Image 1 (cartoon, rainbow, N blue to C red):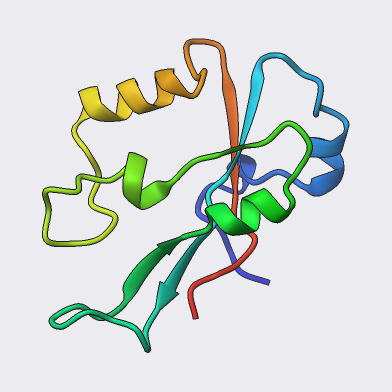
Image 2: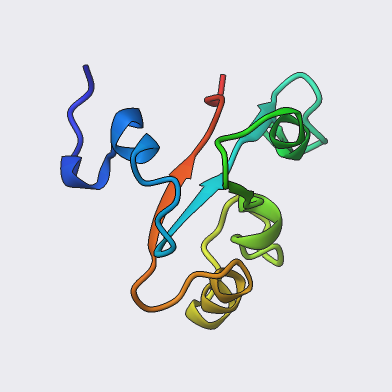
Length: 112
């Protein structure tokens, strides 16, 4: 079992199941695929959104959040570079996150 620096930030599925109707909670599927075999020249991998996975099934009430497309600085030559605070806040606001909102992020896969 891995050791987490902030285990209080991890929730269990039974905790989440009892709160699916909580209006202060936003749940996001952040699935992303890193495709090593299809990497473009000069890149270690190709980033593929997990939107198709989300469309095929997700936690009830969850929305999809595209980590590379919406929550990354796409002007950077590196994948998943944190955007500036204003861009991050604007993206989260578009997804209904504001003061008093708790957020659960999940992925259905892991990088391979």
